[in-house]
Image 1: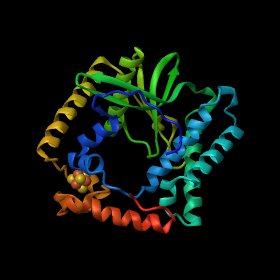
Image 2: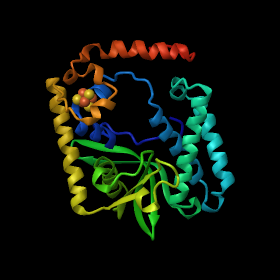
Image 3: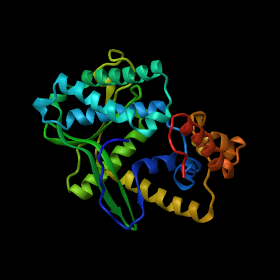
Image 4: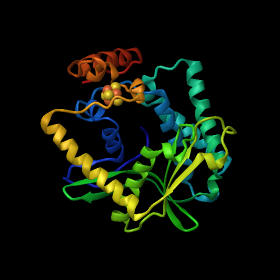
Length: 294
Ligand code: SF4
């Protein structure tokens, strides 16, 4: 999605926190997504989250005193221009009413953000910052959405478009952020004090601030736990790649899995996924005036 990004180069195999979470969630899903690279149509709710991220990134990258209401409006306008020209957004093929609902949902998420903090109060260290860490014969790497200071202490944080989750149900979110905290410790030689999720879903007034902000302290034990999880995923992924056997993990979330129709655990055939999905994606691409996939 829009927004400049760069990363350091390394010849080591690399896992991102989201790949680690995907593999832990279901190895077969990992295979569909990252090994077979099955093309898929964008999901509206995910793009809405990206859109909100972009608005807040544009707003918060200004010096604190310049993060005014006008600046928030112009961040929205710039993000909107970028998205209207973005292939993923065009592939949603939203009609005018649905397009307006898309923008309005993002406005509501930004209003929810203002319930959490005023942007002028945010002590931003970096946004969309690339970090990585070598863990033996592979590395982990990715972009931190937001690195900030709270009362002088470093905090790794991220926005989620979902409605607030209780901390005990936010395991995946915390694992992802704790991996970033580990990368900060290695690359920046600074150990964050806390990881934090800002939930922006639901109506602005539906949740109080303390439900929307969920955090966990960074401890040596928590860092060890994610380091061990990353190493285990790396080993299990190598074993699955060598054998060609990616296990299925049937769960409630299967009903929201993009690959369920080709999943062997649901009677599907993975070998036809690429061809069938390419046809569906190309039909949509043609309908919105985009060239077919190569
Ligand atoms: S449908 Fe369920 S078991 Fe199959 S790939 Fe998706 S998450 Fe895994």
